[in-house]
Length: 330
Image (cartoon, rainbow, N blue to C red; front, side):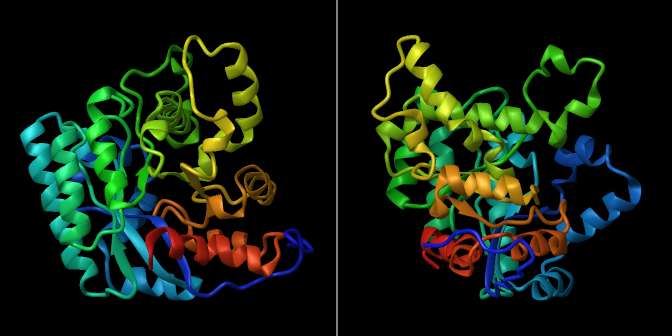
């Protein structure tokens, strides 16, 4: 199958599916206050408009970009920023019920990812099952760790077992580290989306891999945005150095083999053709999927990027639509 085509060719792909697309439940502003406060006032206003709209504004942008379906998720940090377990459980349910009502207005255009109270693995598993079986959600998006607890910990096995049984994916979305690394001191530009979030989220994903989650639950699929937080480009080195410095850790497969099988990625927030070609080369065509990161990224820019990518039309269709159709059983 031919992958690369001429750089100047444009291949419009209608019926795209995008699934790092965010909203905000009313009352959840308290969780995002510190993050949104760092953004330019006018840009923050546009973001707030996008987060709060489920109708003409959002659908109009989707129409212009040829996006048929958007799977929506609660913007970060959401309930992962809640310190009270009881409140996290209640607010996750509240958010999921709110989203279900909103996507019910446009069932052919919008779908949902569950917010989960990962502070309690059993409660998270129950809410995931309710969201999938009763609300019709397509999986879950979780905004990183819960108060510094990562999900490779043994108590999360029951959650991963439930996720595998439901056969839905888990989108691991960026969040701030529990403690900012010393290297970021006096360099606030390294925090957040510029660098820190990718390092934090990529490290969390590697904890799941090296912690054996995918060996114990081979059907689990983790989604990573932002071109896989950079991890696909280090697959060779993971194999090379793990063979030398495994420190008593054993895996059923080489680290690189979990990419494209258990770890899948989206293009959200990285509109670079060289990066896309590298990701496809490392992950395989079936392991890479289109997304925007609306409203934090520009939908038109994301669609212009993917439609002018130097890839064959059948490859672009898989990345923009067919892979997601298969993954989410659309």
